[in-house]
Length: 482
RNA sequence: CGGGGCGUAGCGCAGCCUGGUUAGCGUGCCUGCCUUGGGAGCAGGAGGCCGGCGGUUCAAAUCCGCCCGCCCCGACCA
Image (cartoon, rainbow, N blue to C red; front, side, top):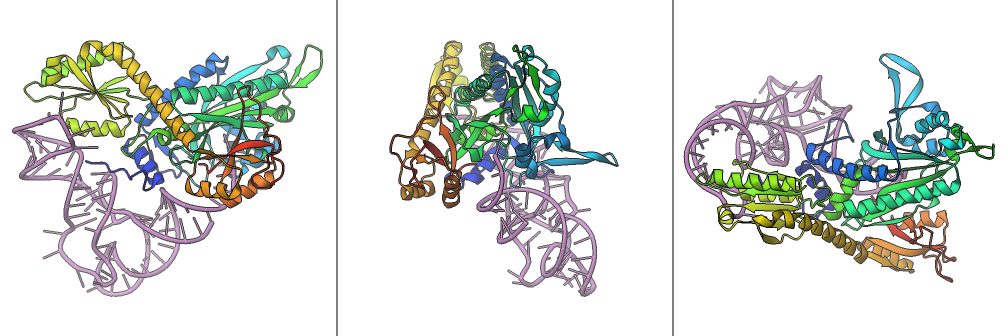
């Protein structure tokens, strides 16, 4: 069957949904707003998860697991926090047939439950820092859902740390933001802008929120990860207190940071094309698909050669899949694996075996390359690395080509409407002006970018805000967002 | 929550306006033959509470009412 994908240029949204469903990443379920992540999609998520988990551990964190339920009294302790999340919390009111004395929230995030536990763990400055991460599911009762991008239940990791000083917490916040950035660019081939969120956009209960912002190929922004400096807001409400070396009792300084299955949506929308997915080799469930081409007369010889190639590639550390089905034609398989975004296809038929070679076809460029069979181990890892690099550079070029600067509001409005993309523009720093711009253009401030030292960059002397005309504080990224 | 669209075979759809034999088409699935370097071909076969409930009628996939679900666009939203 020819699985038609709605052309990307015609209807990006329909294209996205078609790609997710037809490539077997995920599907809708009987539970509205919740998706089933199918094996191919879950394998992709596992690769993403493992690549990030490695980095989280390398930076000194340990994994743990905390309860799914949050008693209402705990969730309510931090006022801004509960106010921010109240509209999207799912509540458990009954245990069996009996109504509960206290409602239980299904975690929309775990600050409250984790802080209540940390208060027992922390006594002395010697207990600090606490550097813990958990991989979990959370529930947010969103009114509008999109596969991977915003689902009622989703999978994520959330890091929750406690520190002795404000400086140490800030250092941790930025460290993890930069881990996310390096991870997104290296593993997902997704270039991101690291920056600080405005007061209006920050996490409920945080002192400062930072994020990495990616540009999707329709020019809209996707918040791909966040890192929060929580200050002492939670430690004061949850009594996370330690006795310091100077004998004083002090509240800890905290951070939290997370990325979710939304990243899968980001990968799809960053790299995909008219033919479907294009997966970065480092996270692709299948890096190389081997398609044997045979007739009944030479079937055994070709399949045996193909199997040898597969075991050699596996031994070389390449995730190679051999599709030896004879129920589908080679042409059908070519199209199928292209749609599924497999970075490299390896064709091997009788003519190839005769010449001791095979055909390699790149998914990203559609280029075909002849390769001697003897050179596979030597060539393939490098070729996969090259595809990964090329994908990142291609995405970066797209992002840069669609990032524009202006200080003229009329031009700003026209760019947002006609070109989308990011617009770097001067802003006075007032929330009212931010909201006014959002109201007038649907564009939000994605972030205030950071310099190499992770400091905010002040606007040039004399620069004026694009909307208010008052002196500008920063040049900020505007975009319409998911 | 507002506006729009859609629920008929695993998937995608036609039929409905104008009620009437056994509800059809494509694809997928099963059997066999044949094929395999860009989504092959032939033959046979299985598969339906026509989203649910109620109403009108001699007769409802079709007309009417209510309900449920899903999708899209808004509004809302770390």
